[in-house]
Image (cartoon, rainbow, N blue to C red):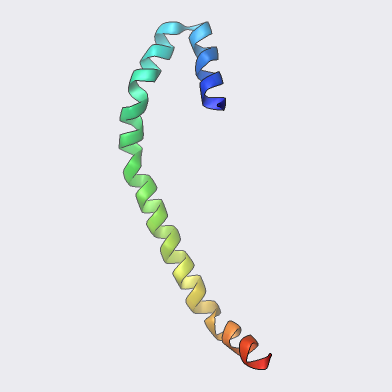
Length: 65
Protein backbone atom coordinates (compact mmCIF):
# COMPACT_ATOMS: atom_id res chain seq x y z
CA UNK A 1 0.00 0.00 0.00
CA UNK A 2 2.86 2.35 0.83
CA UNK A 3 4.44 1.80 -2.61
CA UNK A 4 1.15 2.68 -4.24
CA UNK A 5 0.81 5.87 -2.22
CA UNK A 6 4.37 6.89 -3.07
CA UNK A 7 3.72 6.18 -6.74
CA UNK A 8 0.50 8.18 -6.61
CA UNK A 9 2.38 11.09 -5.03
CA UNK A 10 4.98 10.87 -7.79
CA UNK A 11 2.16 10.71 -10.35
CA UNK A 12 0.66 13.86 -8.90
CA UNK A 13 4.00 15.68 -8.91
CA UNK A 14 5.39 14.47 -12.25
CA UNK A 15 3.20 12.08 -14.22
CA UNK A 16 5.67 11.27 -17.04
CA UNK A 17 8.26 10.10 -14.51
CA UNK A 18 5.62 8.05 -12.70
CA UNK A 19 4.59 6.31 -15.92
CA UNK A 20 8.22 5.56 -16.78
CA UNK A 21 8.69 4.10 -13.28
CA UNK A 22 5.56 1.99 -13.74
CA UNK A 23 6.88 0.56 -17.01
CA UNK A 24 10.45 -0.03 -15.77
CA UNK A 25 9.52 -1.61 -12.41
CA UNK A 26 9.10 -5.19 -13.76
CA UNK A 27 12.47 -5.01 -15.54
CA UNK A 28 14.23 -3.78 -12.42
CA UNK A 29 12.57 -6.57 -10.44
CA UNK A 30 13.85 -9.15 -12.95
CA UNK A 31 17.39 -7.74 -12.80
CA UNK A 32 17.40 -7.87 -8.98
CA UNK A 33 15.93 -11.40 -8.78
CA UNK A 34 19.30 -13.24 -8.92
CA UNK A 35 20.58 -11.15 -6.00
CA UNK A 36 17.54 -12.15 -3.95
CA UNK A 37 18.13 -15.82 -4.75
CA UNK A 38 21.79 -15.52 -3.74
CA UNK A 39 20.68 -13.86 -0.49
CA UNK A 40 18.31 -16.73 0.26
CA UNK A 41 21.07 -19.27 -0.44
CA UNK A 42 23.60 -17.44 1.74
CA UNK A 43 21.06 -17.19 4.56
CA UNK A 44 20.44 -20.93 4.36
CA UNK A 45 24.17 -21.72 4.46
CA UNK A 46 24.70 -19.42 7.45
CA UNK A 47 21.82 -21.04 9.32
CA UNK A 48 23.30 -24.47 8.58
CA UNK A 49 26.72 -23.39 9.88
CA UNK A 50 25.10 -21.94 13.00
CA UNK A 51 23.20 -25.19 13.60
CA UNK A 52 26.38 -27.25 13.23
CA UNK A 53 28.34 -24.95 15.57
CA UNK A 54 25.68 -24.97 18.28
CA UNK A 55 24.89 -28.70 17.98
CA UNK A 56 27.26 -29.86 20.76
CA UNK A 57 25.85 -27.35 23.25
CA UNK A 58 22.30 -28.34 22.41
CA UNK A 59 23.14 -32.05 22.65
CA UNK A 60 24.73 -31.58 26.09
CA UNK A 61 21.76 -29.58 27.29
CA UNK A 62 19.36 -32.32 26.15
CA UNK A 63 21.42 -35.05 27.83
CA UNK A 64 21.34 -33.24 31.17
CA UNK A 65 17.58 -32.92 31.36
